[in-house]
Image 1: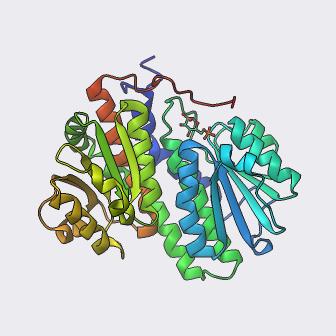
Image 2: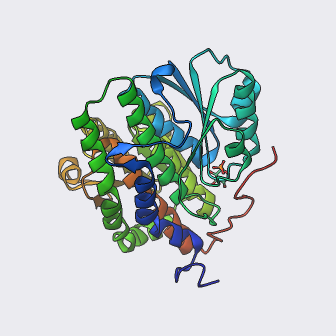
Length: 365
Ligand code: G6P
């Protein structure tokens, strides 16, 4: 009903708009007196040499973003896999492996099977879930709730950014436990996280502009999303959102991989959506954009003011977001990616909350 949708036209719109609030709640839940506090029995990252993360769909892309964070901050080596592959591959699980499962519903059959496999190998099992009364939560040694509140739209939105928030806190804890982050650095990251709800509100305020671009994107048959570093998995998530609800064929690629295939698709009818804050890799992304533009491709650049300036002329459209701590950019840039998919779907008149052939929770193989 309209009441349940809080005045929004769709659950997805409501859930996108809720993100500043739920993210703030998740943060408040995990931060006590400026330190990260995990539920019992807690977790000490100095006991591990390696993390394996397993999930499906959007939750899997949250894991891929977190891989960049864990490696950079904690120095732990990280492997990420989709659950349906992991469970049948019988991968070796050496001692001192932390097995981390991410699932909104906590009921995804493949993810649960992957968890049971790791349990059989005596790995420590930690899960990051939204539904705490779920099978995955019940079978974990430690459960980390993302506290996003009920998510009704089939395409995951607020669960994704809350998963990222909890995973970032874990990466910080990992860095701290392993003596790789001093108090000052910790405070700086935590303060950047606390600014996130405000930055998200600025991103949400761009919804009208994004809606106008989305109308043009909705005309396309194929769309490419590009990103570098931790923005690469976000490019894949942006493409997933668009294909799930607007049925437009979309692919997410690492910007540097463009010339190894996808550039063959580029012509004036293919929007290329580049998600790139002005970080240390930005000039490399600019040259990738020039390669696209030289072939008549339409670049939609999502960046900050500094990035817009550095990129120069030639983009089809540019959307600017506030500046953000580069490591946290995937959390902020998730919002324009979600809004773009949402508005494209609305323009096409598809069933936004219940896209054809998809289920909210895949409890059978
Ligand atoms: C389905 C949903 C996706 C979700 C995926 C994993 O495909 O449509 O939105 O990302 O399952 O679900 P989980 O509940 O395990 O996060």
